[in-house]
Image (cartoon, rainbow, N blue to C red):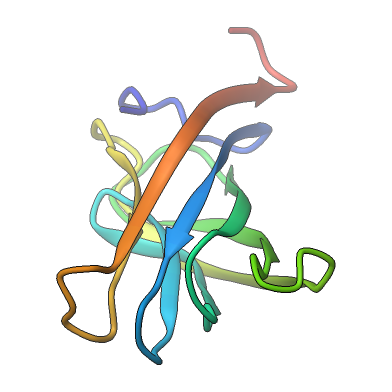
Length: 139
C-alpha cells in the first residue's frame, strides 16, 4: 500500500517483477498496474506462443501535484517478453497514461494479469518482485 498523502509531485513508485508464462491456446495476456482500483499506465499485452515464455515487467506511478481527492497520476509499463520456443525472440511492449486518483487516502498498488481465454492449463507465475519508492522530497 501507498500511505495517504504520500504520492505527491516528486515521488515515484517503481514495481519490477519477473516470471514465466505457460500458455496452451491462442489469446492475449494483458499485464496491468492499478492504483486504488484505477488502471495506471495502460495495459501491456503480449500473445504467448506456448510453454516456457518468460517476462520482466517494470511499472511506475508518478505523483504530479499535492495530495488531493482527484489528482492526476502518471504511470508507465514496460514489458520485456521472451518466447520460450525461440529463446531469442524478444518483444518490448510499452504503454503510458494518466488517471485521476484520490491520493489523500491509502492506495493499493496492484499488479494483475487477465487471461483472455478460459483454460485450466494456463499459468502465469511471478518468481520475484520488488517495489521501490523514489523521492526528491524527504522520506
